[in-house]
Length: 279
Image 1: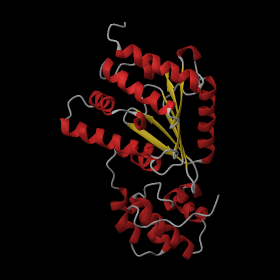
Image 2: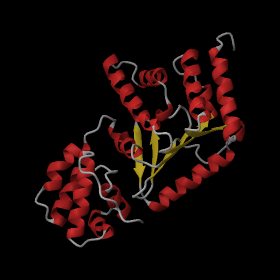
Image 3: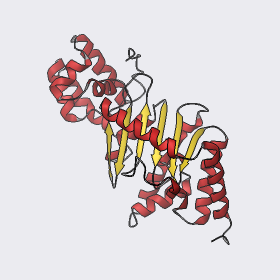
Image 4: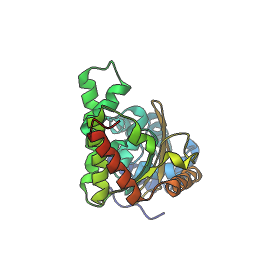
């Protein structure tokens, strides 16, 4: 693993906490593995904390203060670093996504959040929370659109999305919303901002039938995998587990249509939605 670069302490409370953890660990003469052992976490996990990618939970902060003799510094400051606009089960994944160099995602049912339009995001959020006040829905939609701003860079991160054909066929928000949403995904592909493939129904059984998968790589930290379920999500850093999920993603890509065929299909389905007289 390459030597970690200096972090900008002004970037975020989490970056500050990570920089301080690295400083305290090195001052104590401990490796990442040695610091993680008493907490039963991997060296990769410590590296993610130091890179400002992972959230430092209170129980870990207390142990760091005890092991490193930091007089309660991490305990006092971890609460501010843990604040997030995202749901608890997704907060760490969203914040890691923001600094990833590569994001690879398999979406079984919905257009990935990074690629959603405002109307599509609103329709999905309302489906999740049918009785929530409009203000709550708008907060979630705003957070989702803010995530998509990272696509404003012409090259970084590299985003590679594999969409199950069900994503194209499941009508969310009505035909006009779907037409706009799929045209937006196709536009990102045609402009070479993302790589997108469609896993067709004809592919049959595949390696990710259990659910969605997101893989994230970083310049100065080990890769992460994120898997989710109904209102739950798990951010995984175990090297063997991440490698297994990387193989799963490779198998899905191999079964999917080519990027050119996929864009043609997405564009065609978007046009079908745009013409309301189509069945």
